[in-house]
Image (tube, rainbow, N blue to C red):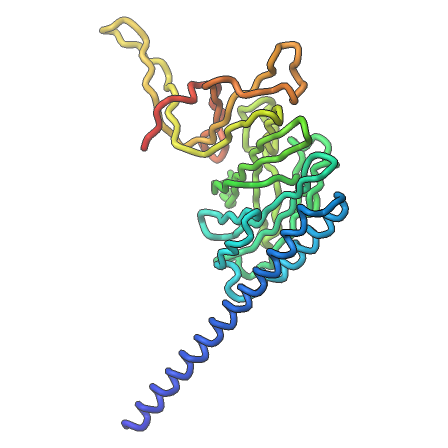
Length: 306
């Protein structure tokens, strides 16, 4: 009996040693790969022509895609790739790798990879190909990974569609050219095979109510705030019979909040290189009944819940 107990403990010890070896080998492989990727990426900004920069970025994209097939890559930090955005969905279903290449001719080219995690881990990484410079009427276009409206994302917000599908709001930035910058609200949905679709008409009360994504164009010489936060907004006026006046009770909600943009002069309407944020005035969207309800102009300096 002691012999069998000893044999079992020995076998368990050997399995633990083998497992530790595999983990060490995996970690070493990831570290080595990260060093190689960093070297490739560092050369992009030194390219003397746009074609040279784009070729290096494409090489980086291909090498990163291979790296994401390595064991442990989905949880690896890739800390030294400082100029590659690595944002994970709050539900832990995917991680999005995203970067931009500033072009000498002005503007940017964007690159992206989606790596699946959790219950979606069975799907291979998806490459995003930027075609934003050829997409007509991008606010209404439903895109896929092959004709993606490129941007640099910094926030993922999960929500449910009317058909109960999981969907995600992506907040992003796009430096369109040397004169016009932009922020955008993108919509991302995956089908049963993990195929991404970008854009969905979930903003029924904004402008014509048919937009698939929202693009805020403004002067590149100014910044624009676009965030997701707790925000206090005015409620509906209620009549106070004792005071004989209307009172407005503020309500605090999680909102997509953005600066109200307007041209510097009325005659410059439609010329986005002259659009700037209006001081202390914001607009926003709150999630309600499977859509994002538009909230008109309000005081952006309203107190927020801490």
